[in-house]
Image 1 (cartoon, one colour):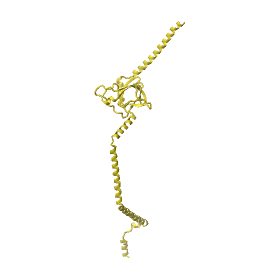
Image 2 (cartoon, helix red, strand yellow):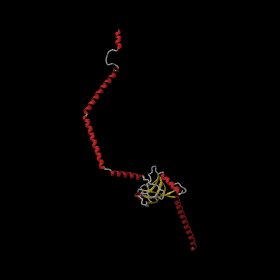
Image 3 (spheres, one colour):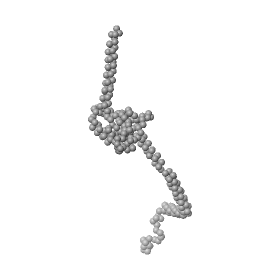
Image 4 (cartoon, helix red, strand yellow):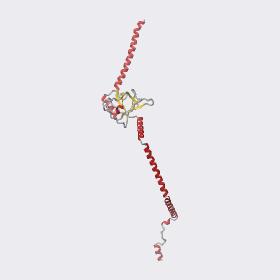
Length: 267
């Protein structure tokens, strides 16, 4: 009885194993096909440290994940024309999912390259951004209004290139660093001496003004008193005119008018 059940168990086990193998193969095939057919590799570089960025980190376009970091490496010099700045740059390969970028069918390579070059010409830049307080970083792709111009590279990128752009925090950090360097280069003792000289000159000027005012105090007092007398006289004249406005029409001498003299002669 036991010997009769052994072939059944063997067939069942073989069928289960074959089914699992088929499912795994299908998943691998579908995943590999989708990734290989709808994956597009571009590259960028970064002049600053990329702490927190690793293979598999997200690549976002305006907050939407459209790919991941494929590889991070140093720029390998291939000629004697490489500069120190090129050697310090970090080369980053980005794997973009064309399906998430709105493509149902993969375009040809020439069209993809033209599309990426058009995006870059219209301000597409890559920025390494930190993800909150976790210390992990990601790549943010954004269309900038005033993008920084691409650097002059001494190597030719193998893939379409997306130039980098500094993040907001990096901009603040660079500004603070420049300010500190300017303060360090500033001759503080010379500046302080100039400030003291200006203060002393201002004090001397104020003293001279006080001396001038003190010396002319009597003259200024006389002028003020004369102005006061003139004001009193004008006030008195205004009061008299208000009481008797005919004063404005009365002649200075009191001789009779010619008409009055003629009439008196006829009488």
